[in-house]
Image (tube, rainbow, N blue to C red; front, side, top):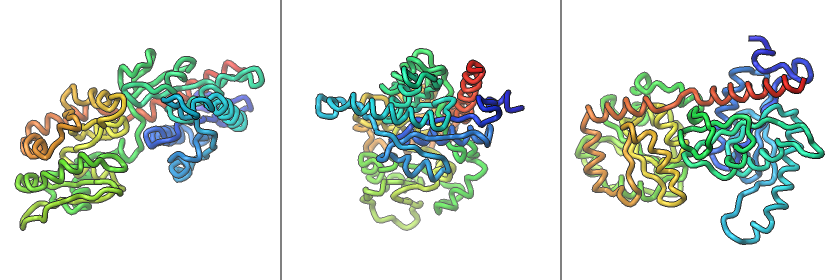
Length: 387
Protein backbone atom coordinates (compact mmCIF):
# COMPACT_ATOMS: atom_id res chain seq x y z
CA UNK A 1 0.00 0.00 0.00
CA UNK A 2 1.45 3.43 -0.90
CA UNK A 3 1.42 6.42 1.38
CA UNK A 4 -1.57 8.01 -0.29
CA UNK A 5 -3.65 4.87 0.23
CA UNK A 6 -2.59 4.37 3.85
CA UNK A 7 -3.44 7.89 4.92
CA UNK A 8 0.12 9.24 5.06
CA UNK A 9 -0.01 11.77 2.20
CA UNK A 10 -0.28 15.25 3.65
CA UNK A 11 -0.53 19.00 3.34
CA UNK A 12 3.27 19.04 3.15
CA UNK A 13 3.78 16.33 0.54
CA UNK A 14 4.61 13.10 2.28
CA UNK A 15 4.70 14.33 5.90
CA UNK A 16 3.49 11.61 8.29
CA UNK A 17 -0.02 11.57 9.63
CA UNK A 18 -0.20 13.25 13.04
CA UNK A 19 -2.51 11.68 15.61
CA UNK A 20 -3.36 13.14 19.03
CA UNK A 21 -4.66 10.76 21.68
CA UNK A 22 -6.84 12.19 24.45
CA UNK A 23 -7.30 9.67 27.23
CA UNK A 24 -5.56 10.69 30.42
CA UNK A 25 -6.37 10.21 34.08
CA UNK A 26 -6.91 6.56 34.89
CA UNK A 27 -5.56 3.31 33.50
CA UNK A 28 -9.00 2.71 31.99
CA UNK A 29 -8.41 5.69 29.72
CA UNK A 30 -4.63 5.48 29.22
CA UNK A 31 -4.27 1.78 28.44
CA UNK A 32 -6.73 1.77 25.49
CA UNK A 33 -5.01 4.87 24.13
CA UNK A 34 -1.62 3.16 24.30
CA UNK A 35 -3.00 0.02 22.66
CA UNK A 36 -4.27 2.14 19.77
CA UNK A 37 -0.91 3.95 19.60
CA UNK A 38 0.83 0.60 19.22
CA UNK A 39 -1.65 -0.43 16.51
CA UNK A 40 -1.09 2.83 14.64
CA UNK A 41 2.66 2.29 14.70
CA UNK A 42 2.16 -1.26 13.44
CA UNK A 43 0.13 0.04 10.51
CA UNK A 44 2.66 2.77 9.68
CA UNK A 45 5.86 3.33 11.72
CA UNK A 46 6.14 6.90 10.40
CA UNK A 47 2.93 8.09 12.08
CA UNK A 48 3.45 10.92 14.57
CA UNK A 49 1.70 10.16 17.86
CA UNK A 50 1.15 12.65 20.67
CA UNK A 51 -0.75 11.92 23.87
CA UNK A 52 -2.53 14.59 25.87
CA UNK A 53 -2.48 14.24 29.63
CA UNK A 54 -2.37 16.03 32.95
CA UNK A 55 0.36 16.26 35.56
CA UNK A 56 -1.66 14.21 38.05
CA UNK A 57 -2.64 11.29 35.84
CA UNK A 58 -1.09 7.86 35.36
CA UNK A 59 -0.12 8.91 31.85
CA UNK A 60 2.91 10.77 33.22
CA UNK A 61 4.47 7.34 33.76
CA UNK A 62 2.64 5.06 31.33
CA UNK A 63 2.98 7.13 28.16
CA UNK A 64 6.76 7.81 28.29
CA UNK A 65 7.36 4.20 29.32
CA UNK A 66 5.69 3.12 26.07
CA UNK A 67 7.87 5.49 24.03
CA UNK A 68 5.30 8.12 23.05
CA UNK A 69 5.33 11.91 23.34
CA UNK A 70 3.20 13.40 26.13
CA UNK A 71 1.91 16.96 26.31
CA UNK A 72 0.33 18.17 29.56
CA UNK A 73 -2.71 20.42 29.82
CA UNK A 74 -4.90 21.66 32.66
CA UNK A 75 -7.19 18.89 33.94
CA UNK A 76 -10.93 19.51 33.69
CA UNK A 77 -12.73 17.20 36.10
CA UNK A 78 -16.45 17.84 35.94
CA UNK A 79 -17.73 18.58 39.48
CA UNK A 80 -20.82 16.74 40.66
CA UNK A 81 -21.60 19.18 43.49
CA UNK A 82 -22.16 22.91 43.88
CA UNK A 83 -18.77 24.02 45.16
CA UNK A 84 -15.78 26.15 44.32
CA UNK A 85 -14.66 23.79 41.59
CA UNK A 86 -17.93 24.36 39.75
CA UNK A 87 -17.48 28.14 39.95
CA UNK A 88 -13.96 27.85 38.56
CA UNK A 89 -14.92 25.38 35.84
CA UNK A 90 -15.48 27.83 32.92
CA UNK A 91 -12.07 29.41 33.49
CA UNK A 92 -10.39 26.02 33.71
CA UNK A 93 -12.12 24.84 30.55
CA UNK A 94 -11.06 27.92 28.58
CA UNK A 95 -7.47 27.53 29.74
CA UNK A 96 -7.38 23.82 28.95
CA UNK A 97 -8.93 24.35 25.50
CA UNK A 98 -6.28 26.97 24.66
CA UNK A 99 -3.54 24.59 25.79
CA UNK A 100 -5.01 21.69 23.83
CA UNK A 101 -5.38 23.84 20.71
CA UNK A 102 -1.74 24.89 20.99
CA UNK A 103 -0.74 21.22 20.98
CA UNK A 104 -2.95 20.43 17.98
CA UNK A 105 -1.39 23.31 16.04
CA UNK A 106 2.17 22.50 17.10
CA UNK A 107 2.00 18.89 15.94
CA UNK A 108 -0.17 19.58 12.88
CA UNK A 109 -2.84 17.19 14.13
CA UNK A 110 -4.79 15.35 11.44
CA UNK A 111 -7.13 13.54 13.83
CA UNK A 112 -7.91 13.42 17.56
CA UNK A 113 -8.84 10.07 19.10
CA UNK A 114 -10.63 10.58 22.41
CA UNK A 115 -11.20 8.00 25.12
CA UNK A 116 -12.89 10.13 27.79
CA UNK A 117 -11.41 11.40 31.03
CA UNK A 118 -10.04 14.73 32.22
CA UNK A 119 -8.35 15.76 28.97
CA UNK A 120 -11.01 14.65 26.52
CA UNK A 121 -13.42 17.59 26.77
CA UNK A 122 -10.70 20.23 26.15
CA UNK A 123 -9.40 18.17 23.24
CA UNK A 124 -12.86 17.80 21.71
CA UNK A 125 -13.60 21.52 22.05
CA UNK A 126 -10.19 22.54 20.74
CA UNK A 127 -10.62 20.29 17.70
CA UNK A 128 -13.71 22.23 16.64
CA UNK A 129 -11.58 25.22 15.69
CA UNK A 130 -12.94 28.74 16.11
CA UNK A 131 -12.64 32.40 15.13
CA UNK A 132 -8.88 32.45 15.66
CA UNK A 133 -7.99 28.84 14.87
CA UNK A 134 -10.34 28.01 12.04
CA UNK A 135 -8.89 24.68 10.98
CA UNK A 136 -11.10 21.95 12.32
CA UNK A 137 -9.44 18.70 13.37
CA UNK A 138 -11.69 15.65 12.96
CA UNK A 139 -12.43 13.59 16.05
CA UNK A 140 -12.89 9.87 16.62
CA UNK A 141 -14.48 8.94 19.96
CA UNK A 142 -14.07 5.57 21.64
CA UNK A 143 -16.33 4.74 24.60
CA UNK A 144 -15.14 1.90 26.84
CA UNK A 145 -18.05 1.60 29.24
CA UNK A 146 -21.56 0.29 28.86
CA UNK A 147 -22.82 3.70 29.99
CA UNK A 148 -21.03 6.57 28.27
CA UNK A 149 -19.45 9.28 30.37
CA UNK A 150 -20.17 12.98 30.01
CA UNK A 151 -16.90 13.75 28.19
CA UNK A 152 -17.61 11.32 25.38
CA UNK A 153 -21.24 12.40 25.18
CA UNK A 154 -19.91 15.90 24.45
CA UNK A 155 -17.38 14.63 21.93
CA UNK A 156 -19.83 12.36 20.12
CA UNK A 157 -22.02 15.29 19.10
CA UNK A 158 -19.53 16.50 16.50
CA UNK A 159 -17.25 13.49 16.04
CA UNK A 160 -16.56 12.10 12.59
CA UNK A 161 -16.84 8.54 13.90
CA UNK A 162 -18.09 7.16 17.23
CA UNK A 163 -16.87 3.75 18.41
CA UNK A 164 -17.77 1.70 21.46
CA UNK A 165 -16.55 -1.36 23.30
CA UNK A 166 -20.04 -2.79 23.82
CA UNK A 167 -23.54 -2.24 22.44
CA UNK A 168 -26.00 0.26 23.93
CA UNK A 169 -23.40 2.59 25.44
CA UNK A 170 -25.73 5.56 25.17
CA UNK A 171 -23.97 7.01 22.12
CA UNK A 172 -26.61 6.49 19.48
CA UNK A 173 -24.51 6.12 16.33
CA UNK A 174 -21.65 4.17 17.87
CA UNK A 175 -20.02 1.30 15.97
CA UNK A 176 -19.17 -1.61 18.28
CA UNK A 177 -15.49 -2.56 17.88
CA UNK A 178 -14.55 -3.82 21.35
CA UNK A 179 -11.97 -2.53 23.81
CA UNK A 180 -8.44 -1.77 22.56
CA UNK A 181 -6.06 -4.06 24.46
CA UNK A 182 -2.29 -4.44 24.63
CA UNK A 183 -0.69 -7.02 22.39
CA UNK A 184 0.44 -9.24 25.26
CA UNK A 185 -3.25 -9.93 25.92
CA UNK A 186 -4.62 -10.08 22.38
CA UNK A 187 -1.88 -12.46 21.25
CA UNK A 188 -2.18 -14.73 24.29
CA UNK A 189 -2.81 -18.42 23.58
CA UNK A 190 -3.75 -19.66 27.04
CA UNK A 191 -3.51 -23.34 26.23
CA UNK A 192 -0.11 -22.98 24.58
CA UNK A 193 1.54 -21.31 27.59
CA UNK A 194 -0.51 -22.91 30.38
CA UNK A 195 2.25 -25.24 31.56
CA UNK A 196 4.78 -22.38 31.59
CA UNK A 197 2.34 -20.09 33.40
CA UNK A 198 1.50 -22.64 36.08
CA UNK A 199 5.17 -23.42 36.66
CA UNK A 200 5.84 -19.67 36.99
CA UNK A 201 3.43 -19.43 39.93
CA UNK A 202 4.29 -22.80 41.45
CA UNK A 203 1.17 -24.75 40.44
CA UNK A 204 1.03 -28.31 39.21
CA UNK A 205 0.48 -28.73 35.49
CA UNK A 206 -2.88 -30.46 36.10
CA UNK A 207 -4.04 -28.09 38.87
CA UNK A 208 -7.44 -26.44 38.98
CA UNK A 209 -6.61 -22.77 39.45
CA UNK A 210 -8.77 -19.91 40.70
CA UNK A 211 -7.47 -16.41 39.88
CA UNK A 212 -8.61 -13.62 42.21
CA UNK A 213 -7.98 -9.91 41.73
CA UNK A 214 -9.79 -6.68 42.43
CA UNK A 215 -7.96 -4.16 40.28
CA UNK A 216 -4.63 -2.46 40.88
CA UNK A 217 -5.52 -1.67 44.52
CA UNK A 218 -7.26 -4.94 45.26
CA UNK A 219 -10.75 -5.23 46.74
CA UNK A 220 -11.27 -5.78 50.46
CA UNK A 221 -14.65 -7.50 50.11
CA UNK A 222 -13.35 -9.96 47.52
CA UNK A 223 -10.27 -10.58 49.64
CA UNK A 224 -12.35 -11.42 52.71
CA UNK A 225 -14.72 -13.75 50.89
CA UNK A 226 -12.07 -15.78 49.10
CA UNK A 227 -9.54 -15.99 51.94
CA UNK A 228 -12.36 -17.01 54.28
CA UNK A 229 -13.06 -19.99 52.04
CA UNK A 230 -9.42 -21.07 51.78
CA UNK A 231 -10.10 -24.31 53.68
CA UNK A 232 -12.97 -25.35 51.44
CA UNK A 233 -11.00 -24.48 48.31
CA UNK A 234 -8.05 -26.53 49.51
CA UNK A 235 -10.27 -29.47 50.44
CA UNK A 236 -11.63 -29.46 46.88
CA UNK A 237 -8.11 -29.52 45.46
CA UNK A 238 -8.29 -25.99 44.08
CA UNK A 239 -5.15 -23.86 43.83
CA UNK A 240 -5.52 -20.09 44.23
CA UNK A 241 -3.61 -17.16 42.74
CA UNK A 242 -4.77 -14.11 44.68
CA UNK A 243 -3.62 -10.55 43.98
CA UNK A 244 -4.86 -8.73 47.07
CA UNK A 245 -3.55 -5.22 46.42
CA UNK A 246 -0.40 -3.51 47.73
CA UNK A 247 -2.22 -1.82 50.63
CA UNK A 248 -4.08 -4.93 51.78
CA UNK A 249 -3.18 -8.12 53.61
CA UNK A 250 -4.92 -11.48 53.73
CA UNK A 251 -5.90 -13.33 56.88
CA UNK A 252 -5.18 -16.87 55.74
CA UNK A 253 -5.43 -20.10 57.67
CA UNK A 254 -2.28 -22.17 58.11
CA UNK A 255 -2.11 -24.68 55.28
CA UNK A 256 -2.60 -28.36 56.00
CA UNK A 257 -0.15 -30.98 54.69
CA UNK A 258 -0.96 -31.78 51.09
CA UNK A 259 -2.98 -28.62 50.48
CA UNK A 260 -2.67 -27.17 46.96
CA UNK A 261 -0.88 -23.81 46.87
CA UNK A 262 -2.63 -20.59 47.85
CA UNK A 263 -0.36 -17.99 46.25
CA UNK A 264 -1.05 -14.51 47.64
CA UNK A 265 0.74 -11.53 46.08
CA UNK A 266 0.23 -7.76 46.36
CA UNK A 267 0.24 -7.23 42.61
CA UNK A 268 0.55 -9.23 39.39
CA UNK A 269 3.12 -7.92 36.94
CA UNK A 270 2.38 -10.69 34.45
CA UNK A 271 -1.35 -10.69 33.95
CA UNK A 272 -0.88 -12.64 30.73
CA UNK A 273 0.62 -15.55 32.68
CA UNK A 274 -2.03 -15.20 35.39
CA UNK A 275 -4.79 -15.52 32.77
CA UNK A 276 -3.04 -18.48 31.17
CA UNK A 277 -2.63 -20.30 34.49
CA UNK A 278 -6.25 -19.87 35.56
CA UNK A 279 -9.41 -21.91 34.94
CA UNK A 280 -11.72 -19.28 36.45
CA UNK A 281 -11.39 -15.71 37.72
CA UNK A 282 -13.12 -13.72 40.44
CA UNK A 283 -12.80 -10.02 39.68
CA UNK A 284 -14.46 -6.62 39.44
CA UNK A 285 -16.16 -5.70 36.19
CA UNK A 286 -14.51 -2.50 35.10
CA UNK A 287 -14.52 -2.09 31.34
CA UNK A 288 -10.84 -2.97 30.92
CA UNK A 289 -11.07 -6.02 33.18
CA UNK A 290 -14.10 -7.44 31.37
CA UNK A 291 -12.49 -6.81 28.00
CA UNK A 292 -9.22 -8.52 28.91
CA UNK A 293 -10.79 -11.51 30.66
CA UNK A 294 -13.21 -12.19 27.81
CA UNK A 295 -10.61 -11.55 25.10
CA UNK A 296 -8.45 -14.38 26.46
CA UNK A 297 -11.50 -16.65 26.84
CA UNK A 298 -11.37 -16.93 30.63
CA UNK A 299 -14.71 -17.48 32.41
CA UNK A 300 -15.22 -15.28 35.43
CA UNK A 301 -17.33 -14.43 38.42
CA UNK A 302 -17.82 -10.68 38.01
CA UNK A 303 -18.41 -8.66 41.19
CA UNK A 304 -19.38 -5.08 40.28
CA UNK A 305 -18.32 -2.24 42.54
CA UNK A 306 -21.22 -1.50 44.90
CA UNK A 307 -20.83 2.25 44.32
CA UNK A 308 -21.19 4.50 41.31
CA UNK A 309 -23.87 4.54 38.63
CA UNK A 310 -24.08 0.80 38.07
CA UNK A 311 -21.91 0.81 34.96
CA UNK A 312 -19.79 -2.12 36.17
CA UNK A 313 -22.84 -4.36 36.18
CA UNK A 314 -23.68 -3.22 32.66
CA UNK A 315 -20.09 -3.86 31.54
CA UNK A 316 -20.36 -7.53 32.53
CA UNK A 317 -23.74 -8.29 30.97
CA UNK A 318 -22.50 -8.82 27.37
CA UNK A 319 -20.30 -11.64 28.71
CA UNK A 320 -22.66 -12.98 31.38
CA UNK A 321 -25.81 -13.11 29.23
CA UNK A 322 -24.41 -15.63 26.70
CA UNK A 323 -22.97 -17.76 29.51
CA UNK A 324 -19.33 -16.62 29.68
CA UNK A 325 -19.49 -15.63 33.33
CA UNK A 326 -21.53 -15.14 36.46
CA UNK A 327 -22.64 -11.82 37.95
CA UNK A 328 -22.64 -11.60 41.75
CA UNK A 329 -23.45 -8.54 43.85
CA UNK A 330 -20.70 -7.44 46.20
CA UNK A 331 -22.88 -8.13 49.23
CA UNK A 332 -23.62 -11.66 48.00
CA UNK A 333 -19.98 -12.61 47.50
CA UNK A 334 -19.44 -14.43 50.78
CA UNK A 335 -17.17 -17.24 51.86
CA UNK A 336 -20.24 -19.48 51.70
CA UNK A 337 -20.79 -18.54 48.06
CA UNK A 338 -17.16 -19.34 47.27
CA UNK A 339 -17.34 -22.68 49.10
CA UNK A 340 -20.57 -23.60 47.32
CA UNK A 341 -20.98 -22.04 43.89
CA UNK A 342 -17.34 -21.39 42.97
CA UNK A 343 -16.07 -24.75 44.19
CA UNK A 344 -18.98 -26.42 42.44
CA UNK A 345 -18.14 -24.70 39.16
CA UNK A 346 -14.43 -25.48 39.33
CA UNK A 347 -15.16 -29.14 39.99
CA UNK A 348 -17.65 -29.42 37.09
CA UNK A 349 -15.47 -29.75 33.95
CA UNK A 350 -18.38 -29.76 31.50
CA UNK A 351 -19.92 -26.57 32.86
CA UNK A 352 -16.55 -24.85 33.08
CA UNK A 353 -15.74 -25.81 29.48
CA UNK A 354 -19.06 -24.39 28.28
CA UNK A 355 -18.40 -21.09 30.09
CA UNK A 356 -14.89 -20.96 28.64
CA UNK A 357 -16.21 -21.40 25.11
CA UNK A 358 -18.88 -18.74 25.64
CA UNK A 359 -16.37 -16.23 27.03
CA UNK A 360 -14.07 -16.76 24.05
CA UNK A 361 -16.93 -16.06 21.63
CA UNK A 362 -17.66 -12.69 23.23
CA UNK A 363 -14.15 -11.28 23.45
CA UNK A 364 -12.66 -8.85 20.89
CA UNK A 365 -8.97 -9.20 20.02
CA UNK A 366 -8.73 -6.78 17.09
CA UNK A 367 -10.27 -3.63 18.61
CA UNK A 368 -7.04 -1.61 18.76
CA UNK A 369 -6.38 -2.20 15.08
CA UNK A 370 -9.99 -1.35 14.19
CA UNK A 371 -9.80 1.97 16.04
CA UNK A 372 -6.46 2.74 14.38
CA UNK A 373 -7.85 1.95 10.93
CA UNK A 374 -10.88 4.17 11.50
CA UNK A 375 -8.69 7.04 12.69
CA UNK A 376 -6.42 6.77 9.65
CA UNK A 377 -9.44 6.69 7.35
CA UNK A 378 -10.79 9.86 8.98
CA UNK A 379 -7.39 11.56 8.73
CA UNK A 380 -7.06 10.59 5.05
CA UNK A 381 -10.51 11.95 4.25
CA UNK A 382 -9.77 15.22 6.04
CA UNK A 383 -6.50 15.68 4.18
CA UNK A 384 -8.19 15.02 0.84
CA UNK A 385 -10.84 17.62 1.64
CA UNK A 386 -8.22 20.27 2.40
CA UNK A 387 -6.48 19.96 -0.95
